[in-house]
Amino acid sequence: MSRPEPRREQGLTLVELLVTMMISGLLLVLTLEVVNSNRRLYDTDSRRVEVNQNLQSALRVVSNDVRQTGERLRRNVPALELRVGSSDTLTIRRNLLDVVLPLCADLDSGTTAATLYVALQPGTPVADCQAATPALVAPWEAFRNAHGGAVKAFIFDPVHGRGETFTYDAADAAGRFIHRSGGTWLNSYRTNDGPVIYLLETRTYAVTAGQLTLSVDGESAEAVAPSIGSLKVSLTLKDGSVPSGDFPTSGTSWKDVRSVQLSLSGSSTSRGKTTSRALSETVTPRNAFSAED
Image 1 (cartoon, rainbow, N blue to C red):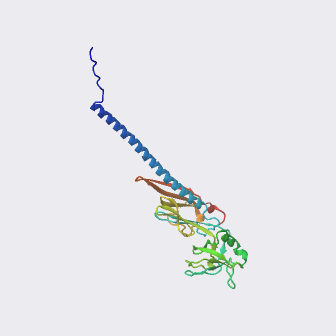
Image 2 (cartoon, rainbow, N blue to C red):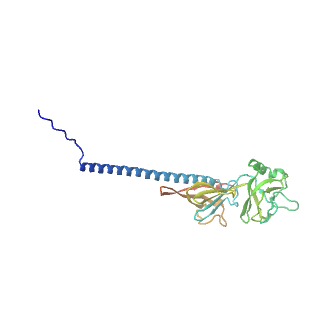
């Protein structure tokens, strides 16, 4: 009998092994490139979404306040103030109470006078001032007590266009005066100039350290939205003109404003990449078109 020949085991040649390794390496490189590309797209989309959300949120807050500019205020009160810079500062005011009090005795700058007379004083007749009655300050007292016992008020001199915020914390039961809690007067106020006292809310927007900030009634500013680069404000007046600097200027008022264009820029950074965007919105300050002047 003949002996069967032994089987030869089949294997890869060196060339086949090298080709297989090269193909596997190429597939691995392509796979990694797809993964990295998808990650870059994800990072880009995440940054875009983040910056858009920040800008939209910030625009919504500011535009809502602009729409309420000058509520219950007359033309001569600075309901809208703009300070132009590399990033603008926008101040908006609105009245919180229909009752406005006259100032019936002079105040001097640099003093700490805490009593603001809002009713006629014996022997010193003042236009717009009436005899003291509890009803004179009753609405103010009701508002103050409903808001924690101390609120911000604003005194304004319409002749010289100046005013300041102070803390109102009490009133005379007979209606003769209201009381200021601490502080020194920055300006002098003369009764013959017709100064008036409002329960105002003053809201100031600015960009500080990469954040949109809001200061209410002169208090410390708080962040409204992060990663904001600048706030730019452009006003269009009812006569079609566009002021190029600070507002208001001599002879203009917030009542002259037809529209306010708000522009915010921002950015988001991740993995060393930055995505920057800018959004704008045009808002109408509705109270500028009210009949009251």
